[in-house]
Image 1 (cartoon, helix red, strand yellow):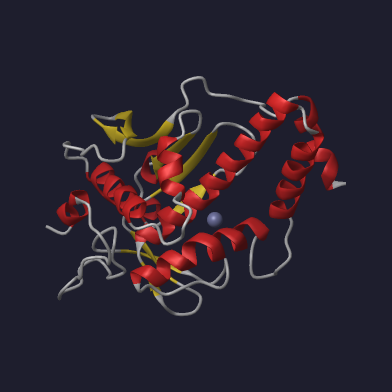
Image 2: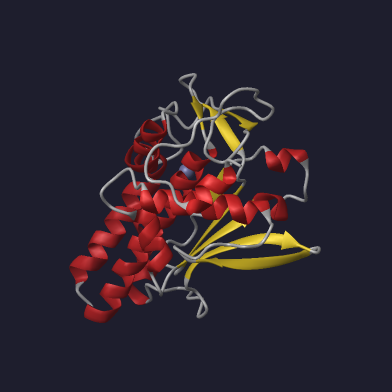
Length: 254
Ligand SMILES: [Zn+2]
């Protein structure tokens, strides 16, 4: 029975805790070595690594223009006890062109650690199952939704450890059980549907992008920049994204 899988939570809700885990770290490669850049909202990145430039601009944009009331990226960026790792997907997939056409994936794994890890590429758009096009920032926000769920699990587990209130444990176990089950054949599991409907679709609408109604039937392609669904090589005007624009966003349109 599924329930047994979460028996561990009762004894030790925090299975693994990275003592250095804080905030959002962007992993990239420079001089043949993996490096980590700590993202801080309001601090501009002055280096010339385009993966960091683009990812920083996307995170800044999402914080200033959160499509829903809950500013999930801001919370991920400021929670001192939780780390969201955003890893350039080409670091893990050996620089192939295939890697550049992968969008993003967040390791779901044990849900009560204080780390969520996302592999991501900053210039991958989606032709969705409904035929519309989606910009890369939608993918980053989708992955942020998975990370945010993990932040919430982690906070519940922490609260349980502090209070030993069995109701908190029951809430945590029920949420995880629900998210890992599959109610609709359109989605890999209920978490994917929840993340799509709660986070990805509101942002896609804000961006004027197409939406998805399924985990299946979408195709990836390379885009001109991290905020547009226009394919690489597109000739013609590319509009700035809507809303209040941080300097880092305007820089990506130069
Ligand atoms: Zn997902």
